[in-house]
Image (cartoon, rainbow, N blue to C red; front, side, top):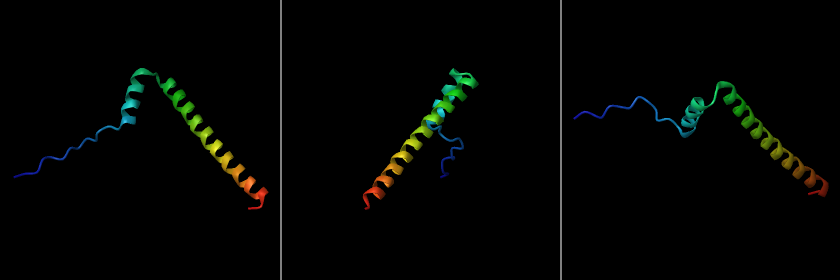
Length: 65
């Protein structure tokens, strides 16, 4: 008895499927603009998190603990 053949193609991820749909709906420039906007949102979130952490350190240093 032989084993079943191995499937060579990967099952696309949900994100990959969304990118495929996006490429059909949006032109290249719109895709780039959307991705740039999303990257800006992520960078703003990272900076906000860093500000909160810096404030926590400053408050801790000011209180002497």
